[in-house]
Image 1: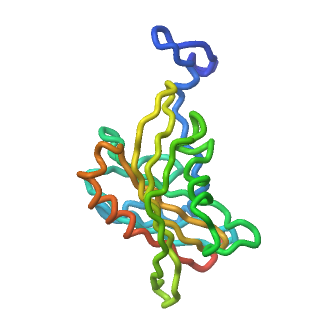
Image 2 (image 1 turned 180 degrees about the vertical axis):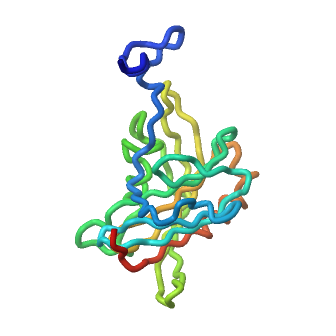
Image 3 (image 1 turned 30 degrees about the horizontal axis):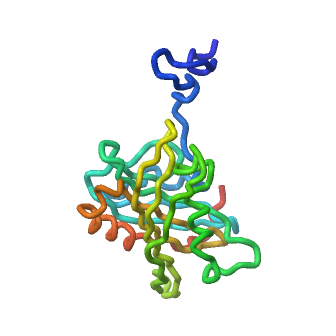
Amino acid sequence: MPPPEALGGLKPGTGRALNALIKTYSVTGVERTGTVPDPLFKPGQVLDEMRTADGAAAQISFSFPEAWTLAGGPNLDVRDVRTSDSAFLLAAPLPSGASFESLTNDYFLDVLFAPEGKYGSYGVVEDRKVLASDVEVLTTPSGAKTLYRRISLRFAPLTYNGNTVERRALLSATHVGGTVFLLATGCLATRYKSLQTELVATQASFRAFGRSAKSS
């Protein structure tokens, strides 16, 4: 027989649906190759490998505050559950016929606020504003030049009870093998000033570069 929380109805005294209490994971689009058993390379450093749209793979790395912990499950995210600080990876296909350089800010925000994702699951995020957006050219280990989009934004997503909470986020994105990889790191707006240095360091540390296809 399924557990009570899977049968629907309301949890007594809360008004919340019982099935809302079942732990679920946000849909991020990432598909890990499984070749890296533990992506926590060392404290405060992630190193993992993701499948790309062309059937190859991308090596992903970024740093983060050591007080944050790596979450379990299929996604790649680190966080401090006490303060709601976090960084997580998103993956989305590069639109057909488009170049990475041609992507607008709205493309990246649509990926971040997708209805099945972390911030869009309780409703459309209407209160959102890009504060800064630029492009940085970095060199891969093979010597190739790669573009990274850096975006700073303010937004107020809906919570499960219909309220909004203002947050700040820094995005870093690039593309490998037909897939756009985007790292989002952020915190509550009230914490941004004290945490800005750490968030900027996480944003700047993000790297994604191609790996040869591996046979399964």
